[in-house]
Length: 262
Image 1 (cartoon, rainbow, N blue to C red):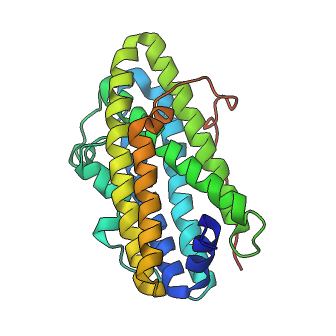
Image 2: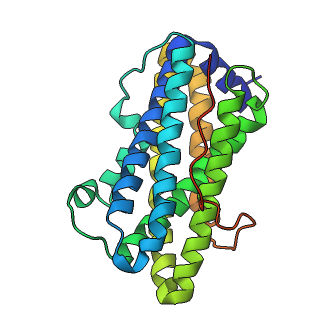
C-alpha cells in the first residue's frame, strides 16, 4: 500500500536516495544558520535583546545540518550535490521571501521592519518544518538509526515556531500588526507554491533513483498537487495565525548539543 510512511521507508532504505534526502536537508539547514547569524549581527540597536535568540535559532539550524551530515557519515556516505530545483531555502530567497542575501552580506544595520519581515518569514517556514518533523517523528521516533535525530530536530523546530509566535505578538502589540498580517499572507502564499514545486522536484529525483513506475510517480505527484489545492483554498491560513505559545521564551538559552552517532 502506498503511504507517506512507505515512501519515506523506501527513501531511507536506499543509500543513494538517503544521501540525497540528507544532503538537501543539510544544505537548507546550513543556509538557515548563516541567515540567522547575519541577522543577529545586524539587529538594530532598539532590538539588541533579540540578538541572542536569533543567534540561538541560527545555532540550532547549524546543528541540524551537522546532524544530517552525521547520519550520512554513519552509513559511510558522502554529501551529494543538491539539485537547484530542490533547494527550498534558496528558491524562497530568489522569490523575495525573507531578507535578501545581498542585503545580509552588507555590514549595514537592519531596521525594525527588516526584523518583522524576518520573523514573519520564519513563522511561515517554521510551521512547515514543524509539521514535516512531526510526520517523521510519528513514523520514526523509535527508529534505531534516525530516531534520536528526528526527536531532537522536531523539538527544536517546535521551539522555533513558538519563538516566532511570541516575538511577532510582541511586535503586533507595539503597533506593527497590519504589516505583520500583510507580510505573513504574502509569505504563506508564496511558500505553498514553492513547497509544491520543490516537493515535485524531490519526488522526481527520488523516483529516478528508486526506479518508480510511471503510475506510482503519478499518484505521488497527484497527492502533492492535492495538498497545494487544499493550501491554496484556505489551508495557508494556519501559517498566518498568531497565538501565545505554551513554550514561552523558547529560545532563551544556549542551543542544545547535537546527539552523537557512532
